[in-house]
Image (cartoon, rainbow, N blue to C red; front, top):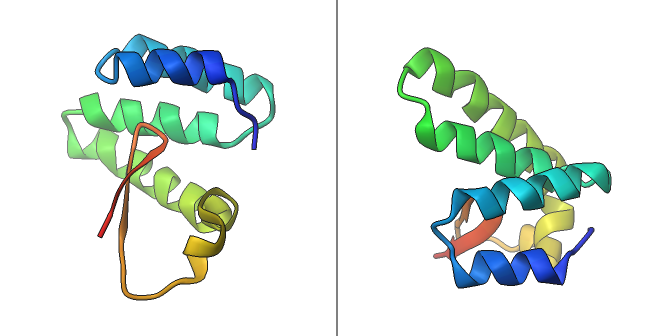
Length: 95
């Protein structure tokens, strides 16, 4: 998984600044990392107002998780009895 500590620091400092996520998503895509597509899809999903626009995004987000959660979550992916919430391509909450 590609990482850019400088861009991650910008996101950490201003977690509500969508622009930083867009820049990071573009950088990840350039590195061939599918998490960039996840960030883009989740950002678009946040602003989509019509169900017809949200549904394909939800489908694609689900496909990305099905294909890549093993990599993204590591050993956590094989554990039972919890759920994870992703926000803008980052693990947001584990319950």
